[in-house]
Length: 85
Image (tube, rainbow, N blue to C red; front, side, top):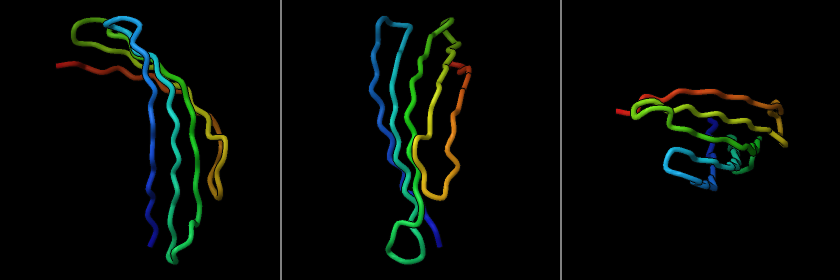
């Protein structure tokens, strides 16, 4: 049986009421059938959010997977929209 215990941290900056800029870091170890670490990955990224209207927010995030044992390393680029109720 395998299980993962990811830990993620964010450092946020709020230049005004509608804007959030942030940096993130993540470490995701996966534990194997014995008490040893079987594989892992790490991720770092920069992103931002902006509230377009009272009910609509846009978010962008770019991240890099700099290390990973038995994991594929690479980049991600994300764009998302969030409806605020």
